[in-house]
Length: 172
Image (cartoon, rainbow, N blue to C red; front, side, top):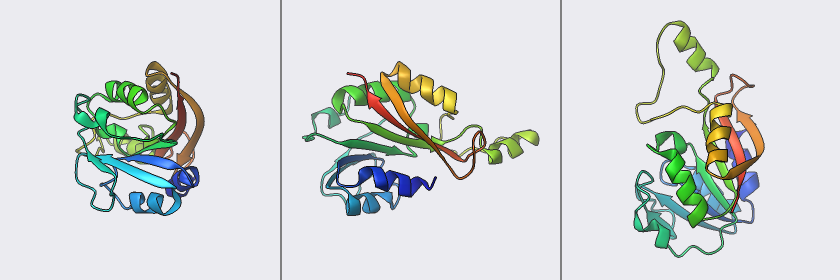
């Protein structure tokens, strides 16, 4: 699927919390289709009036006290692979903001990675601290009490697509 189009379809007319909102232009597109947006990131996001600066690696940040209203959808696109302890982060998020989670991340099994591995090389963004395959992502979500409901893949067919998309419901 087209990753951005998929995300925007799910954000339409919803109150959306966009995690990692300062990293790309996706946030402005979400703002255009959502009923209301909130943003959270380590770096400032000047385009979001409802912005909270937080460090996702440290769940003791004061972001748990942010004045969220009922969030309809959490978008966590191309973020989870940068978080040192993504299991603790997802458990914390499920408790603090119990809303459906739309998560995207690069696929550890992608075709580009396979070509590098065949040459005995690794191709990895220097700021990534982990890779996820469909199985490891499902296991992570389930261990953090999220139930994956919908799967999609972007830029290629499985098992070699560039990335993974999952829509998961929190088990409260």
